[in-house]
Length: 554
Image (cartoon, rainbow, N blue to C red; front, side, top):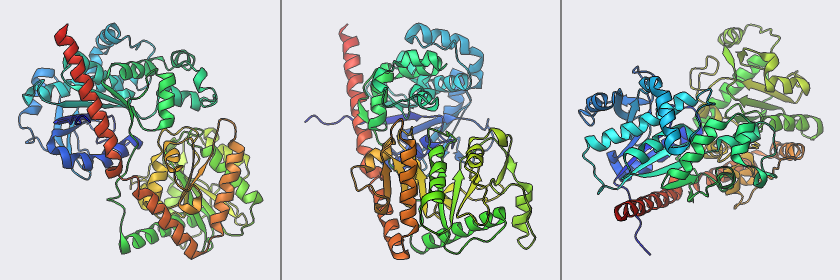
C-alpha cells in the first residue's frame, strides 16, 4: 500500500475562527490541539477580524510572530491582518483579516468569479456579501503567507475551507496558487437546510430533488451556487456524516471523497471532586433562577431536562421537544416534578430587570405576569416557543408537574441572569433532548454526554447515526429515536416515554446511566477521528499532484 501523503503546512479557514457562533467553532477549536501537536506553527487558522482591530477575547495578539508579515500583507495586498494565537487548547496560530476594503470591489470580484466558475451572485442578499468577501480575503492571506515564507511547489501545502462562506477563498487559491492542495468541507448544505426549514419533506423525496431548481424556488441561488461550485473545483471534498453525504451527492452533485465525523476533546470537562462541585453549583443556579421566576419552591428531587442550540424551531426539533413535554404531562404516571430549560438564543432585548432584582433580593416577594422567560423578547406574540407553550396551555402553575423555563439568550457568562456559560449550566442537568429533524452532525448531544448527562436524539443526526452502532436506549447513555419526514407525533411520544423512564430511575441507576453516557463520549475523542482528516489530506495532495502533472504534460 502506498505511503500516505502528509502536509508540511495547513491553512484552515472558517467564519468561526476566533469567533464563537455555532458548531463549527467546536469542530475547529477542539480539533486544533490534536493537529497543533503534529504540525506546530505550520498550522495556521485564518478568521475574520470581527472586532475591527479591538480586543478579541478569543485571540492573543502577537505581532512578533512571523515578524514583518503584517506589514507585508498590508503593503502587497492592502489587507490589514493581525497575527497571534487562538486562545484555545494548543494555542494554534491565528491570523485575523479585516476584509472590509474588499466590499468596495465586490461587484468586480463577483463578475470575475462568474466568468471563471459560473457562481451566480446577482440574487445575493443577507450575509452573502460579507461572507464572500471574507472568503476571498482568506485566499489572499494564504497567498501572502506562502510568498512571505518562501514556500514553493516542492512544499506540501493544504488550504482547507469550511462551509459556503469560505468558497471564494478556494476560487482564489485555484486561480492564483494552483500548487496548493485544496480541501472543502460542508458541515450542512445550504439548500438542504433550507428545504428542511421550509417544511418540505427532505428525506423521503431526496432522490427527486434537483438542488439548482430548489435554490430558485427557495431564493437560495447565490449561496447554493457558490457552495456547489466550491465542491467541484477542490482537490478533496468532505462532509461530516453519511446522512449529509447523501444530501451532497443529490443536491450538490458531487460524492464526498471522505466523511470526516466530528470529534471532541474533553479537556475542559472537570474531573473528580471538581466535577461534583461544578455539578452542584450548576444545579443550584438552575434551581435558584427557576424558583425565582416561577414564584414558588421546587421539590428537592425535581428533574432538570434541557435542550439548546440554534433557534431553528423545526430543524432542531424544538417543536417536538415541547410536544413531548405535553405528552409527559398528560399521559405518564410519574408524580415527580420536571423543569425543562429551553436554552436557545431568540430575538432578545436583554435580561429581565424585575427578575434580576428578585434574584438579588431573594426574601422579597416576586410578582409577575410572565413566569416563562428569563429575558425580555422583542415580539412575544411572534415567538414560536411562546406560541407553542400557549397552544398547549403550559403556564407553569404550581400544581402542574411539568414546568418550562425559556432562556432566550446566548449563555456566554454575561447574560445578566445566570451569568454562567452554557457548559457551566449543562453539567447540572439530569437529561438533555435534541430531537433534530435536520442535523448533519449534532454537537449538542455529544457535549451532553461529555459532561455525563444522558441525552436523547434522533437517527436524522450524524451523531445519532454514529451512536446507532452501539446500544441506543437512554439508559445506555444515549437514546436514539428513528425520525422521518412525517412521524413527529410518534417521536414526541417516544421521547416522553424515555423521559418518564428516567424519572422513575433511582439514584444508583442514574449514576450508572451517567457513567455510560460518559463512556460514549470517550469513543468520540479526536484521537479516534483524526485519521479521517489524514485521509482527506492524502487525497487532496495526490489529486493536486495529478493536476500538476496534467498541466506539465500539456
